[in-house]
Image (tube, rainbow, N blue to C red; front, side):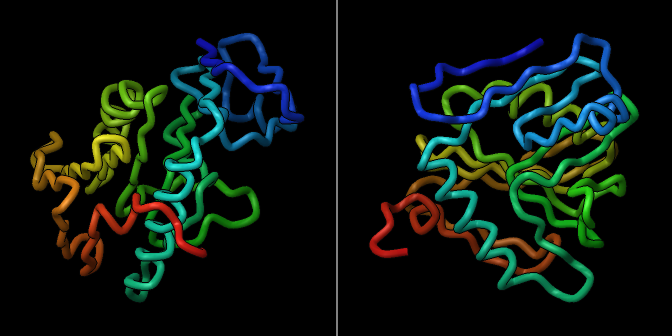
Length: 196
């Protein structure tokens, strides 16, 4: 499965993906180093370039979590892959992990938290396939942020299933102690930049 969004005539690099089934080792051997490329059971998914709103929300959330992180928690930047198996590689928008990602920009250990920031082209994919794979991997907490709807949904793993622990709207704020104490105000993530 290859997902390709319409590209403007800008000079963005093109990506050619190998024929399925593909293993993570095949990506490494072929020199595929595009953070938008994910593997689902050997099938390639090429996520679209982030919209300016999605990129802004991801950057602001990464900074906020980085400032709140406690010892033993590393907030990893966008583009760090989570290797779930030999044929499954996902790239969350934000990852909080027990250790840094290293030179390969890839984790094999289970993170404390993954965050997916949705846009029109990724909303269903993030909410269904990716959330299910994170649950199977045993990721203890997952947040889904929808900047267009101005919502944050928080899920925690309870007895092998994700349970919704919070839904925050445009004027709301989300407080949690997992993986460390932090308060997220949705409006502050999505408001237009003044002079960032």
